[in-house]
Structure formats: structure tokens, C-alpha cells
Length: 288
Image (cartoon, rainbow, N blue to C red; front, side):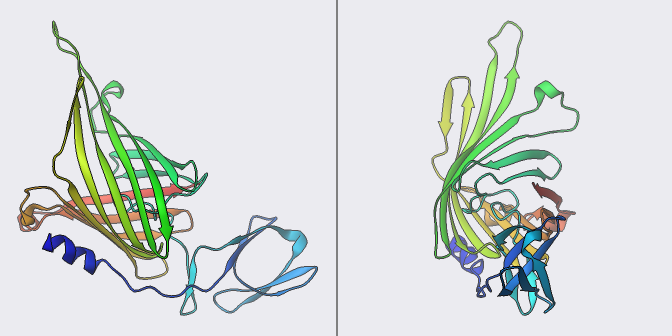
């Protein structure tokens, strides 16, 4: 428990105040981000983060949206398009109504994610292993509901389930397998800097029999924006009765674009890091 409290405290960040800015989309498809300094009946005057003033005729404006990024020390920070996820574990932030993205975790786990409402989202994907036939690929689905998000504190809960293809044995009944994870997550912070603590209970299915873990798994995760386009992301899965040296730790640099986020990092434990190279992590996320 001391290890859990220590890691959670180290993942709690200081936060800067946001400057209110907007995103203006014009008829030619351009996006102009800045603050509206002057508005007349015919046009807007917008000042960008670099101090450039642009005059935009109102007839050329398609829409004006609140920009969910922020201005810091004269630099424009775009929001992280993958704020609802760390490397594998979720945050308590919602995807958002009608928002959708494709994600590929370490090439082996491509998925599609969709926000049905401001609080409910779903994921559907496959766990692909080279050499497996199409009929043998496990299918994964999950649901997450973000039940509270106010004053930098958010809570969510959900479930993930993986269906393993039926195993057929001659002269015996088919074996139906599956398993998953029930979780609750608390997140403190904003979409630029945040830390999360999750408690999860794994479960397994064998034909009509179900078995639930008696003790929860703890997941500690954090996201720290260090520049306009780069964040540091980390998470650790603390399994019951596993020694500290064998607790898996995932660390990554996240490169952030307007619609794309790419994670490049590694998975390791303190006991195995000296014995060879860590397992590489490469994630791609594209938001429509």
C-alpha cells in the first residue's frame, strides 16, 4: 500500500491556468486558432499565439468552436487526442459524444473506439498474433462510463471482455473460453497533466463457469505534458502477491498532433531490466 500511495503522489501535477481561445474554421478548410480581439458586423480580428493579427470576413467562417487547448508562455498547446487512454489502461476522461478514433497498441491490438454520449464510450478490437488464422483471433470489447468530471476530479467505471475462439476436441464437448476486467478509475488533473488510480478485478470464463479474482489489481498511471507536442506517459500494474521487482512498468514519450498521437516507449520490470532489452511499445491513435 505504501508503494501505491507513493506512486500516486508522484503522479500528481501542478497545473497552469488556461487562456480562453477559439478555433475558427473557414470555407476553404483552414483552421485559425487564437483569441478574438475585435468583432464587427462584417469581420473578426483574431490574434494568434505568436502575436499575428488576422482579419477574417464573417461570410468566410464556417464555424467557431471553443479551443480545448491552452496558451502557455506565448505557445499554443493542442489538446491530447488520446486523453481517455494512457498506454493500455484508461483514464476517467470520456471520449466525448460522437467522437471516434482508431488505435493500434503494439501492432497486436488494433481497435475502434466511439463515444455514444458525453459519458458513455465503447471499444471493439482484436488481439492479433502472427500466424493465427482469422477464425482463431480473439475479439475484445469494452464499455466505459465517466460518471463524474468536475474541478479537475473525474471518476469512471467499466468492463473489458475478450472472447477466445471455441476449442474443439474430437469426441468431447467444445470448450468456450473468455476473460476480462472490471474496473473503477479516479483521475485528477486536466487533459494536459493528469494522474489516475484504477482498481480492477479480473475474471475468467470456461464454458458456463465463471471465476472472479478475490483481490483487485491496482493500476497507477500518469500523463505529463512537457512541451507543445510531447508528453510523458507512464503506468504500472500491481498484481496481488507479485513482488515489487516484478511489477510491470510502462513508460513512453507521446508525440501529439492535431488528430494523431504516437507513443514510443518500453515495458520492463526492475528484476528483468538488467537482463536484456525491454519490450518495445509503439502505439498509434488517429481521431476522425
